[in-house]
Length: 505
Image (cartoon, rainbow, N blue to C red; front, side, top):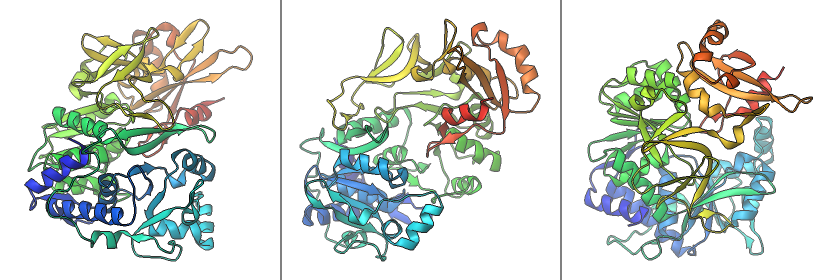
């Protein structure tokens, strides 16, 4: 069964139950969620959305964006997540590759991208917005538009109103929806990396997304009565499919507010990026007693964060998720398992059922399974994913050894930061640790710099402790104490390029 079909069937079984609590506290029942998704589907089909049409999606996380995205997929469209704030050149390059026929955006974004005073204000704030209203389909004329929010100056003439779509007809009986007959048709396109000359986008199908959600549910017990507090779609969707309640924090919710809403809404599960959880624990050192599962993902979870999470929620299971945009999830390990792992590398856990694991000759991790994406947009389908991660097997458990591209060269020694950073971060007083190389233009070697977050006396202590923890050839040339490590993107991943510039002599 496909993603949308599973959700609609669950909604039909429990129409009176609350499916979602919005950031402002408004509640949406399963029955109303189902009606809205089917109404949007019906309205889009009536307006001419054809199977396979890409819909450029520029709507921030909220109940409206969830309903619109599900309605697009149910109608046979493909949701194309292309950040309009990525800059005009990158946005144009992504548009050229994806070739969407529709654009769905918030009214304020249309206004901000078209009205000269608003564009000037956004530019002063460092945001260069493309002119969404004037986008064209290469070789096929202007795009069709959907606006979310009340109509503002700048919204294209003839744009469909999301509010009008919601008020439209919705069949009471379960119609045949896109994916029922072809679950391997594209459903979502997610741009991940690449350059303006060669952008790269992951293509997922309803089948691959449904398989991913089932793997989450297999490892994470979820059902009616559970409340999952997160802004992450890939945990919110399995919540809904399981008949539980998705508690959505408001946009730009401060850490103290996130913790308060968890308590007020009786959260039993939550998902955070490790850096975000650290901020939450700074504001609320004790998490609500009903919490049974704390999931961490999108970036490695340092030992210090795992310990803090376990102490803040002693009755909860703290879990770290290893996943990639191309294949998610891959493995889930408990904080207890990770902290007990004293050998080299970062313990990822046992691969989830159905996930195929193979190690290349150079140690690169290769993955396959029903949750693997269809492939990259414009490229041949994938049957196995080269992850760029180096790994080893400890029995049936995966251990991450580092990123191939992060390798540093020191004479004849190849140094993989990910092999040593977890062990360094587990030392007393070390909140976070990262190793980068600063190239020496004269020798071609790299000065190995260890950046740590912690008290100012750390370098002296680490000089004594590190020889017993990491290989002699991996000992840093220099240790730098920072207030925090630089992060990038919505997932707050470590930005090694910025770190390298910060510690350069």
